[in-house]
Image 1 (cartoon, rainbow, N blue to C red):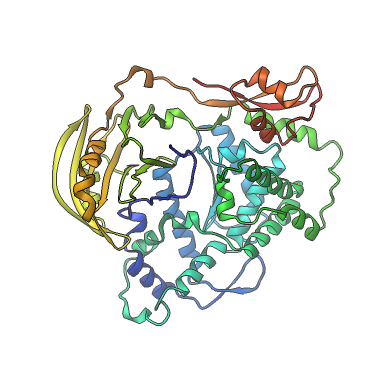
Image 2 (tube, rainbow, N blue to C red):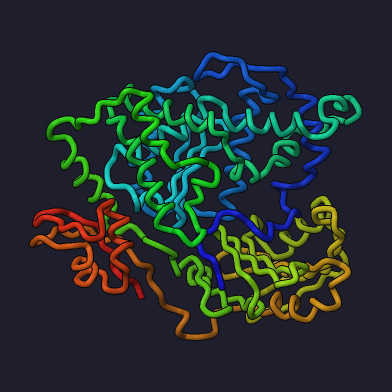
Length: 497
């Protein structure tokens, strides 16, 4: 069964992307030219391990941001983008690093997540935004992530990982210096999954409170958003959890500790809470909720992309993973997978040539072919993946909107068993054939004002009969059995089609 909205890549993205090229030698070369024994943590004034200058930190964040946007997308709402950027800018201006080129993005992803890249790149997903109920909570998220950047937590974590890599410090002189851009690219999207330590999380929490106070915002927003994430984690007791918690560990009890250690006054400012809630809910009215079928939806074992107007058939019974615009499926034996990714290329031939030039790829026969009405360039290849020899077939396809790739990959010693199914899937991409796939609309948040006292169950039956009451209770941060008064504004979910 497909697992929507998971950020971890259980089967892994193919290593033949620019973000992962030359990982070993590139990293070592990068350290040899950027080595700094230690640097001051701008937020604390204390020394910490860092191999990265600020200029490299900024360049690294910009490069990974470009890579991230090839497999993800920004949410299409200029007003919300502007709001998030203005609020983030207000907080960044009172941080210890106000002069960084701060960038704030609202990612079009249903997962509950927020993260920061080195150099001032901050991301919040619409999935997280949907679970917030006032501006102070969003400020808490942004302030926390700004804290990670201000304290250089990501580059400190990368420096620690490099320091424990076998032979890094002792063998630096044995390696040639590569091009800076290649070294930066080698760090790749692994930054998105860099797990922060408990002390770094506590520091980011406290910095979030500091920035909120400096900016004249309610610092309790940091506490409240930790409480929200704890509730989301508990509600999903089947093993799924907000991705934010996979890189920001230990949510249990964090909000109580933070409130106690920072000495926050629990009393809200008179008259400030309800107007803030109402204004924030107005901004969320109409926000896409859950998977957006226009940007790709899996129906049975067929992936349909309405905006790009193509469909692709995955092998039946394979386990499916999605992250942003990447779709992957792997077999039960874990020796075969198919992966679909967008490509930064103007034509299918350009994309195929770039793939063939990537480190680790040994391109073989290539040819043009029409796949389901779409122009494609196919390439047979061999290569090394995680120390294992693999074989595969790649199709670079010009859809009506852009170029995408479909790769069928197998361990070399399993190719003969997997080849037929992999190549059938690779060649299945084409224009949307089934008329029922040509129209779909996502679910959206709808803010309603209660005309009488109602429980969440009553609200669900009246406004969102397709949803469990617990879902609405979580979105509104209320108990499922609690009666809500007339005049209360609440989030409901308006079904798409």
